[in-house]
Image 1 (cartoon, rainbow over the protein chains, first blue to last red):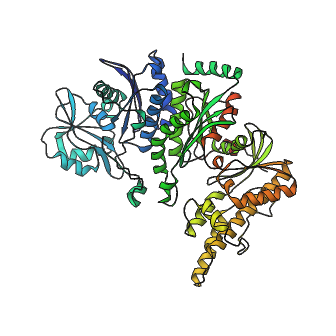
Image 2 (cartoon, chains in turn orange, green; image 1 turned 60 degrees about the vertical axis):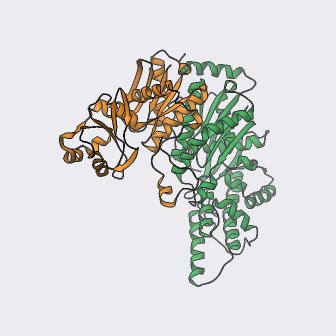
Image 3 (cartoon, helix red, strand yellow; image 1 turned 30 degrees about the vertical axis):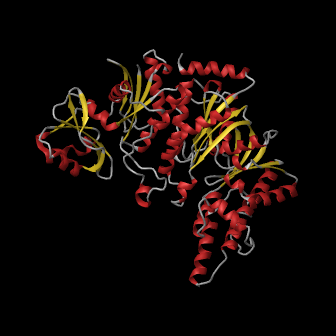
Length: 239
Length: 360
């Protein structure tokens, strides 16, 4: 089973192909934001470079959120259309799960923080137990102070990753001292290999969706809905 | 075989084909649409999922909400278009998509979808300028219409007078310098307390009003160019209502709406007729959402008849945003080999047609 995954939830564009027991290819671009132009060409390049054909992919996966609303839609729309064209299943993996998986086998807790602007981070809390990533908290958009308060209920060290550490490292160190550890840059940012691997595990367990079922997981309502309310009856549910 | 090699091969095959079928996608504003079009003019399906009801609550299109709805709707709308056309993806010869102008987040959903489909199905990708799409709507409704002709494109986002010289060869002879005509309708409707979108609301209520009741300004009507301005007219309506309210005088909404509408229509028709005379074109087409306005249709019919010009209108369904018109425009680009690569990006505020404009 070959899984092709993309992550365009942040400044990074990442594409990876995995199959059981092996990472076949991975592309990571952490530069200027031009996801709309480069995402499909990046997929094409990765597929071509491994001498593969897009038609040979069995599952399409995407980091479906949280993250930049526009970035999420580019990734989700791309993956959904690939799956639609080739009649394949899709798997949506939380961006936060993917970031946490970058630090697989870390001792203590794993806490991805993504800069969500408005003085907030997208975050959750994870632990790696028995070879599997376990999420201990809900996905949330919260002020950093609130997250640090939440983390005080454990005494274990906390491993932070995600682009939030660029903005908040000093503040975290002040509040948490040596209990806080920070991922080195190569593990701190979105990697499609992590998304692909988690998607592969889920696909092998039958946790797949059809392309029309997959939606971005924004975690936040649009500003207009926050201000004036929603009128389409849909609710944002965590997945 | 790499994508680009497969596409070169496909382009050669297309030259030999009797039937060229395009799947087109349009998500530039608040309509998610997909269509299957054969040989540019035969619409096999044209599915439109409108978000108007949702945006009405906010008094206008909310870009973030529009983008969210597009990403949910676009794939089922494509499936529906294919089902109604009765064909599978294997019968397609190309993917057409609106890449601008429009709302950036909304365009991105359609473009990302189109690029992934084109790549996975090894089909040529054809980016279509939204304004070119509107112009092409007339080819669908009038199978015998061929360039050259003059086209007035009027919608919520555009007011352009375009000299259509050939397929893909355009010259903008006039355009709005501020608000689009449809935008003025929306804004005045809001001031009058009428429902969004303003065009149909004002059209309807104006039927009961006196269009000569109030003399609102007709911008540039006596000037020797073909540009438009509607922002002053909108302000004139607002000031008029404000003055009446200050003096505690009542007014008939019907008369205000009808007089405003007449001012817009007079300028649109007058400039179009003058531009046709100057360019020597005898065929005039109207396109875009405002082309559905009944006063514009009526006035344009009378004036073109007086001058002996031939007038063309798309059917109502092809006036507002739809993917069929994009499929039509994409067909003429495709058969002329004008295709895009997978790096194609959205152009939210740039139109190649407008950028190529020479001063008229």
